[in-house]
Length: 248
Image (cartoon, rainbow, N blue to C red; front, side):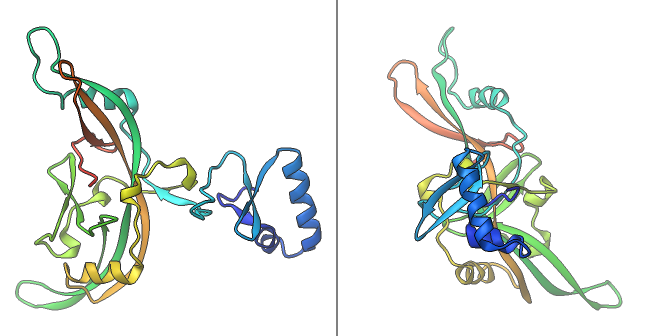
């Protein structure tokens, strides 16, 4: 099974229509018994997947997700996190970095088209397309501030096609199994596509929404521990540019 997905026997059989369904089920059982693939019940049916992938059966996350591959690795993230610590007291750090952890933020990716009037002396109507990314919970718009900071803004003043965002940083998203991504429970998206589109249209004037899906943005979350009181506070940097990041 090369698919990055957890599939029922019927779904696997659908990939090989020339093979009898009974034979597909038998082969899947044999592969599972020999530990070549994973096989577990999900709802009323068993699902099957290659053991190198991870899926969340409880939440029925059985299909691949799109991710931006991290560019800032753990060692660099630790060093950048130190820059967020409070100033030193004599020869000791006022705060120490603890628990650096890679997390993922789901984003609503919205592709749109708009008709615009272009030209100085002779105006002509042209069609432009744009892609924007919305926060999974409150629908704020992800924007690139300067050259190295990704931040969320409530309502950009630019037209949709003029917003600088993740597309300035990422040229391609890769497919990953969803069980391998750690997403905060309070950052799980719950809005339906119609709700996302309605939120988008409150912010931008466009003629057509071409599509809505999700991508995942990596970021490093860390704790700063006060060396005297042992009190902690949290911080984050995005794992693409290394700038400060506020996922909430």
